[in-house]
Amino acid sequence: MSDVLDDLFAVIEDRKETLPEGSYTASLFAHEKGQNAVLEKLGEETTELVLAAKDDDREEIAHESADIVYHLLVLLAMKDMDLADLRSELAERR
Image 1 (cartoon, helix red, strand yellow):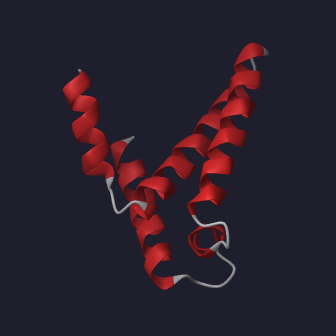
Image 2 (cartoon, rainbow, N blue to C red):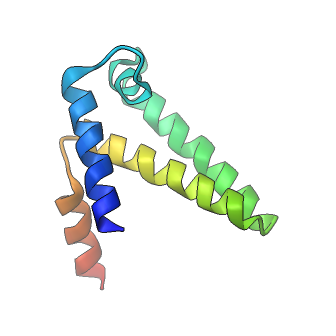
Image 3 (tube, rainbow, N blue to C red):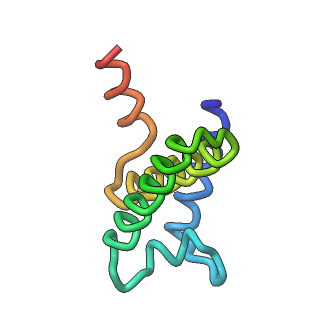
């Protein structure tokens, strides 16, 4: 799983730097709302995850969880943080 996260975060960082046209990730970095666009998506996806969990819809739980992780990684990149920051915090809580 960590390889997938590392690869995804590398793509996010690349989109942040290059801002390719047509990229959803790049559009989040260039959005007129700034980080609020990502924060709104995190809220939306969290609500969808809660509803999927309430309905015990495993497929939708996995889908919404992936959306949350993706948008969380975008937020970390926006804040000039990386997976090492996240891993360090999780390790401290172990």
